[in-house]
Length: 213
Length: 258
Image 1 (cartoon, rainbow over the protein chains, first blue to last red):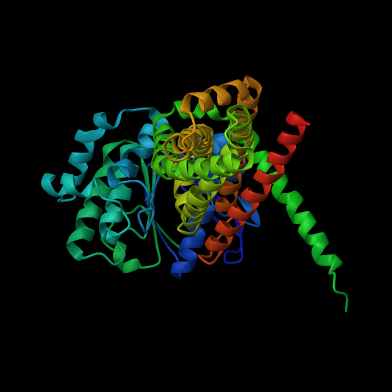
Image 2: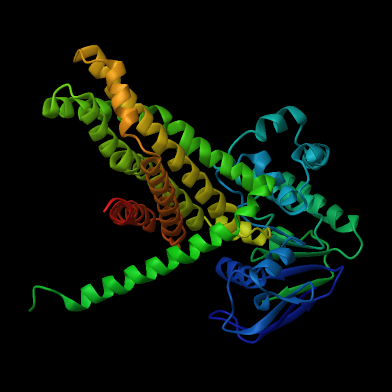
């Protein structure tokens, strides 16, 4: 599902590992900076000096732009800051990848979005207010939640969570953790990868593999 | 010590060619990928661009158009008196052939060129383009193609609108304040107006729209990681758009009317 072969960058030397399909994995880095660098290498944003990265059995850095877009439409990545587009309202952010890749109408996604927010403990009146806002001034836990729900709507085979629980209140952290673990169990063969430098924040996450890098 | 720094001039020339190559590549990509506008999220970006660049500028373009029309017709009347045919001819020459497309382009450069390059630049700095990429969305397809289409269509329509407002403003002013016959002036304008002149004016607007959109988007996307690059990119977008608009205006005018 994810395979790194002899990755060499400024920060990593001959880094190799493999995460099998269907597993839940924690990757713990030594610093926040390394965390970001590793994530960038995995998701195709920073080409390593040498080595190969495979996602869903495709060599990421060998793909054409078109094939790369197709590959990433099958992968969900939840960034630490939510990764939201600042000039789109929350609702437009949530439905963007689904309507872009599948052509689904936003109104067909309403029920699913409501259900996901409900799982996170957000009620309908507040949700109605939230979806019409621009993401800039929102607190970080809401940005992450929106990013999480946006990724979940694509029903990806592989989910990568970047420091998802870092700095959250215990209550919010538990709710998001429950959501990610339930989401993993929803589809057979789905792979979940939690990347963080703060081991404490993912201590309650169930995992088959723990990689320390 | 030499006053003329040859090395610096050489670097500037090389940079200019690099920019031109980048603009050409982006233009070809955008034109080739116009069918992407069929996708609903990309169409939504196009609609927003048409609204911000086109519809929101209507009142400003109308006001400037009317004022320019009044200024030009006052000067013409001062120069040639109440000769309706000559007045119409000079008005068409100045407004339709030159000032219409040129001033509409300058208004759009000042209003939207800076806004687009700054917006795209801050999206790059905030890693929103990376975010699009990891959602499997090509940032150029999603952010640039609809902007190029939106700005080009806006400049095309606004330039025509500017010309109509300038001529209407000039005519209204002469008939109200200068006591010249409205119908005679209108007749003079229509006798001077030729389809070829209108087509050249529309061609200029189209070319200016493409130039402004490509330069603004390219400069916005050239921002890498630092917030201080954003105002620099906006300045480059404005100056290079202006420069290219004047160059192409000269080229089209010379080819069409000499």
